[in-house]
Image (cartoon, rainbow, N blue to C red; front, side):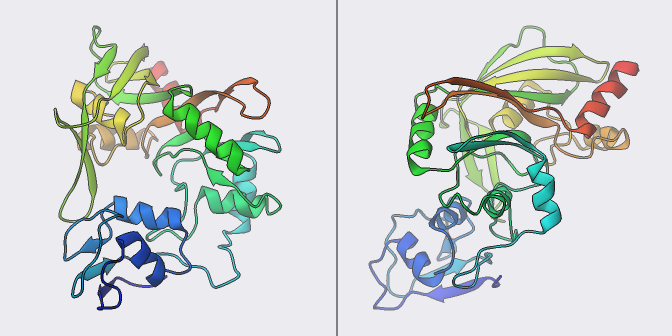
Length: 311
């Protein structure tokens, strides 16, 4: 993994799109990762954020962040123990796709500062499937069901289903405080911003994209609530920001949550983001079968619910 580089655009390179400029300087990095580091604001042109299609000019200075690269002809090899661990969390698999119950703390793919993620684990577990790609994403700290396609045709069809709102997504979340009894639908537009540090933040804003979540209280405890969330749209950090906007941030959320609540629940054993992608419903692209897959809660999430029920 290389360190941060500041590269000045030469006369020969002037006029190139930013994504193509980066592909030249990061030859061993997957194109998907190139777009990700641009989107996250880790790439800067003259100290400012930019877009993949912006054309760089002579003398521009491009910040290229540290990224994990593989030597030519090699693939990233995650620890065997981690491969064995993730193999135990495969919920569904056939010749076309895989659904995995991703543990919290595992990124969906390697990137800036992360040598490997879920995609690298699965590719190493299934080397015979040469086209494995992520169909969608989960935040690193969010656990739960995630789909990976083994074929390009399967990936395309599942992306179409997502665009046409044909994929059902249900989450479980543990939120701080008492959820308002009359607040079932949260319809608040969300806008992505990036701080000077490069950290990506999302906020409710009339200038943002339409974002709709449905919250159903499953159990109201004295100082927290267990809620089921159905996503209608799939914006970045949508559930986390909608919960915060209602006044009940998700337990363990170090970006949008309550430090006091996080510290209190950490003592009870919930030391991570209490958000779990519990159910996925979609149509199998090859068979036409309607699949509805449920991802069991991990032990820490189960235990905190038991603790709260016993109070």
